[in-house]
Length: 555
Image 1 (spheres, helix red, strand yellow):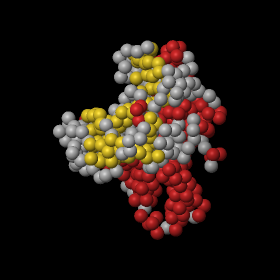
Image 2 (spheres, one colour):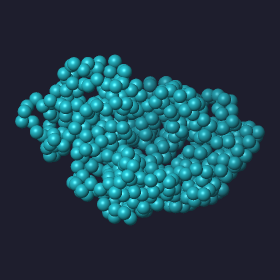
Image 3 (cartoon, one colour):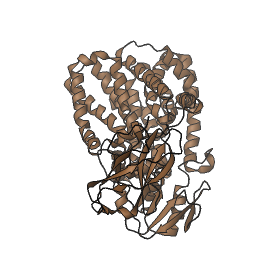
Image 4 (cartoon, helix red, strand yellow):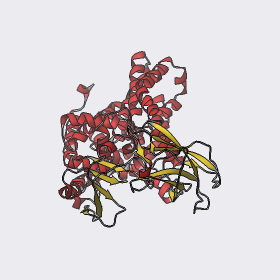
């Protein structure tokens, strides 16, 4: 198959690989990449925010290179693989006459371009979606056990990349309901479930923390048409750049002449409809709809091969996209060329600024799963994100990072500080302050729950507070202060009130290790008129209250 590739395409892909490798080497990490690099320091079958594929890719990259390229190397390879598979997915023999339009059109797709060198969960998601479509295309022509087995592995790889890969599989099945009667399709499902079972087990062992967070705990905001729904439509344009009018025209003109084309249409319209409906509930991030870049490219390129006018205009628009993207890519490295300050600018600067003041001392960042791994990556020092009640849970909530900074002298950095024993500057002009703590001690893994069902705020009712201590040592109660946080309908903390739990046994002075201690409490009256949720929070050693309890809904 590779021998039949046009020479021009091979040359162009070789040049693209070199460009992406150079870009990956010289571009500083963005914060999400640093966070996923933190994942990769301890490989597991799952992580708080995502399945483990992105960490696996980074780990493999680190075997070949250090630094930024040690995070992005495999992504550079996958991006070339994505373009190759797109080529194989086009059946029209005229494609060999239009290699340059094919290449420029694929390079012009904004997020496919960016994920040519960035390492994010969407990078493997895009690649495995292409592989899935290629195998599925053969499967619907001649299903057999070999293809079914391979299809099952690819489905699992998709799901290991990102949770909403489920939508890819769902809309493909919806486009071909006869799969429900196909024994080979059920073999694929069985293989996929078997391959994915380690992640199911990880979720079970971690009390489904990822699912609970994404469905129940994640803060939201009031509906805003411009930010939510209009922003969603802007994203549909942004992923295509200047090619969007002709690409969406091609989508409109394309009919489901066969099962594979029908699959592409269902995948595109399905994603658009799903996230359009979702836009009435939350802001849709651009990368959430990246998957439609794949079917839209295939639909539009096939349309180009049969419509000279579309070929001419998409080709011209793609060239304009490519020029802009190339300038922006240089701007990711050379800040003056980029129109705004971006995450790839100045991370080495601020890390060096802080490290020169504290040396190899561990750093605890208040509420920053972004800055903590970025500092660790560029400094080589131990870090921890201390998440408080006003922030969100993340990988630092569940991994062992807290234990690595316990009872050590640390630099404590927080945006809540307006002065401190140390300060450093970020390249965007922000001044950040910090203090030294000689013997840092936190207990962010303490878990609080209410034994009884509480659906209304009754300040006269006594309820049972259960506190589980997962640590190997006892925790002295005198080090802890308890609070009740009241949240609005969008799960944002609006009121934090102290409470004094009543011990059930007078001699209870500690929370015993690996044990649950029961207390009696009264929920205090809230300053809010009608709080929608509440949760119990614990402050230790004078630190801001942590994320110790789940949101409990009030009617």
